[in-house]
Image (spheres, helix red, strand yellow):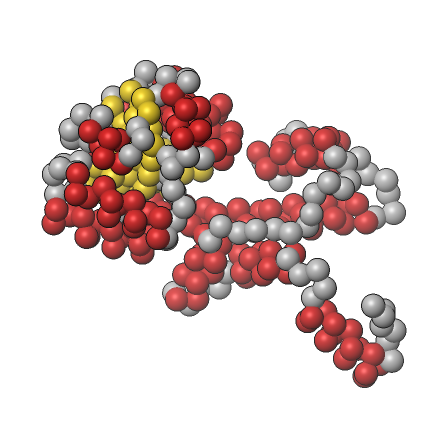
Amino acid sequence: MDIGIIGLGRMGANMTERLLQGSHRVVSYDRSPEAIQRVVDIGATGAHSLADFVRQLKPPRVIWLMVPSGDPVDTTIEQLLPVLSPDDIIIDGGNSNYKDSIRRAEKLKPQGIRFVDVGTSGGIWGLQVGYCMMIGGEKESVDKLDAIFETLAPKDGYAHVGPSGAGHYAKMIHNGIEYGMLQAYGEGFEMLKASRFDFDLAKIAHLWNQGSVVRSWLLELAESAFAKDPQLSSISGYVEDSGEGRWTVLEAVERELPAYVLTLSLFARYASRQEDSFSAKVIAALRNEFGGHAVRKE
């Protein structure tokens, strides 16, 4: 099947390679000529402008966007529209806000352009083990893409979960849950490290993956990380977020739903970015004021 991919970062390039392994013809575009050349070297067809990219795809075209959420998605769609035709399909496989996906689908529909939102999970391991994909859009459009999803996903690794926006909504909640899981593992291993016992953290992670109720792929990755660097001394404690955790918490507020763990795990990420938390200074000062508790001077 013919498919075009715009955005050849780690995910986009790996997805291109997996599609090529599945005997699909892939036309690839990125702002970086080096990124284009890397996938051309493994069998993709390179394009050096969006107009050239569209010309090389057989209509009705299938175009998969793997660009950052927000303005980059809107800008790319606006640049594509003048050269697209009715029944062409745009797939947004990035981590877009589901409300943006609903808006984009509604905007494109009168022009005859189909829009499918795909929440994609798998990270850098997707090339090897496949991608879990949560798909939103009209059933007719999604069905046309089945061969692509079959190639990219492991067995039972993709599903049409609802209308436009549903795919990115499911991925938003998926990532919110991920925040909570990561926080739980982080706190647990910190307690092990701070205990009176000299635990081998890689050994504990491996042990817990042998039938324990907390076993998971994340725990396998923890084992790998501790095996490489037992004290994680080469890693800063600064934890970034890509947006979905924030959107999950805002959705919980909007719907008046209690989401204690997911909210606190998001705030913990913010706390990780403060070298010297002012709120901690306030608490220390107040403890000193009311109880004479010692404070550490800078």
